[in-house]
Amino acid sequence: MPFYSLQNQQDSERDYRNIVIPHMLSLGWPIQFINNLLHRVQWGVNYRTFSIRITDYPNRPNEVPNIEREVRAVMTGHRTNLLVLQAYLPEKGKGPVLSMGITHPITLAHFVYVDKAGTRDKFNQKEDVTFRYIPFSIISKKFGKTHILP
Image (cartoon, rainbow, N blue to C red; front, side, top):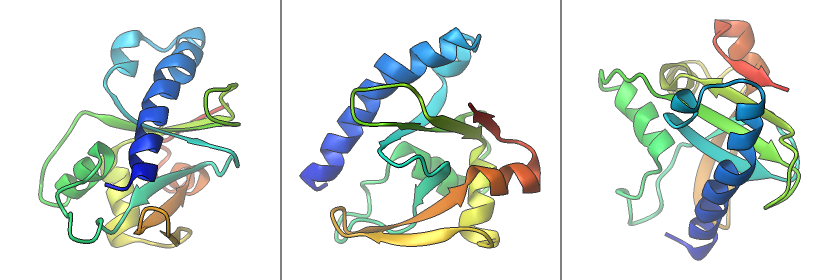
């Protein structure tokens, strides 16, 4: 895995623990729920999207993040009680939480494998992979199963 990706994963974990979890607790979310979320934190622009990797690292197909692993497993019949959270912060290590969305991997799989309407694909040169960006609002309109905060 490229250094850039590894560093982002570590920063995402840190910011989830130090910024997103306290924010969710302040909103009344139970810690048991929060601890069972698959999560990703991004920084800078508040895109209000779920970003799902749709290609693998060249020559390293086994390096699949947990969120993508769950989304792919759904397509093979796997059922999960886990939910996915995507949060946006203004910059690494700093709050406040700009937005966050929570949905089920089945819902994300629908937009990765079935209905791409309203989504956007983008190649990330630093990580050498392609991501599909799924707006919180598209999921909410189609399924009504997305918690969008704030």
